[in-house]
Image 1 (cartoon, rainbow, N blue to C red):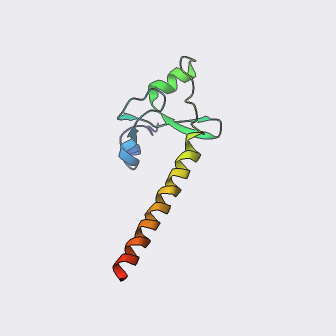
Image 2 (cartoon, helix red, strand yellow):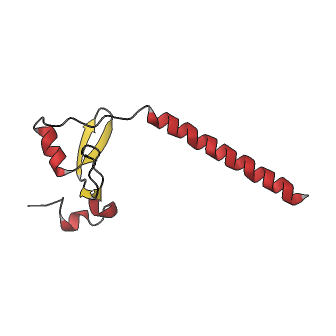
Image 3 (cartoon, rainbow, N blue to C red):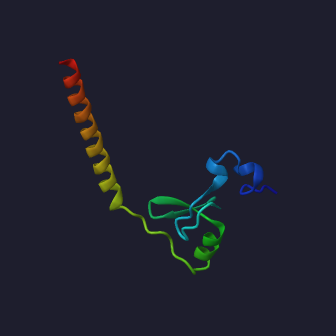
Length: 94
């Protein structure tokens, strides 16, 4: 019987399958179990998977409002970086 959440099966994964669980917010735990919440997929730890299955915890909320804001900030930062690089090029040519 295969054991995909142990040893050899998780060596190829990033950080050997360890990270922060989005449900319980614990760090450096194995986040190997995928669940779907609406259109998004989350990887959660073993204990949270069991708690969600038994109805003791709920699925993590999807932060949709934060994504467009972060994208806008990224474009603003790149635009300001381009403007700064153009001004340095002009001043060095003189």
